[in-house]
Image 1 (cartoon, helix red, strand yellow):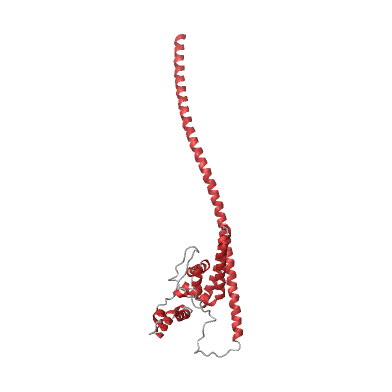
Image 2 (image 1 turned 90 degrees about the vertical axis):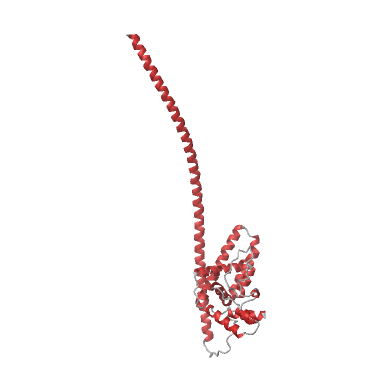
Length: 294
């Protein structure tokens, strides 16, 4: 029964977001009277960020697998890396997740869903979590995410409420190309269909490569701007520290001058008293002399 439930969930979470709830309820009604009905009815609608990641997994499975493989390699390598190497690793990881997030936004737009910057940030955080945490990677690859993920690579992530089913971890979502077609539809063969599909695929690849190039260029510019600002910040801080040192020296000198002023005022007052005393003595001597001369 668990396997059948996973298959049903796999189909439901591959649907356009507005179709999920009515399709789930219809499936539960179809299964009424069976053990599966209650479990199907309990499946929760994913958040927009969760749905975008699920969409990416099904449409760009190879790219997602490569991202997870890079994440596994980086996790294995980072234990022996220096601080500078780890910072470089973080920048590379951000570049990869930013590029894949751009691809996910394009897919969502093509499937009728606008992705805001806030949702895109959640998608990128989820992809980052998939790279730094193995279990998060399994949750992403299941295609049954309910919500965005966050992981530091240090603490374990609670995935109980992040995926539709506990058995989803380890399950691999069915890709778009592998999705079953509806048997009741009868398509009239189009002799140009393969050529049109090939042309469309080439255009889609070209558009994706252009978006990736633009995203990479924007990232490089932002990273360079950040590096320049960090260098400027260090320079400004050094200048501030030097000014603080000079201010401290000037304040110390000011205190010393104040002490010298106080001493000079005291010496001046003493000299003034001596001048007054000497003047009085001279006047008295002059008077005495004048009397004697008479």
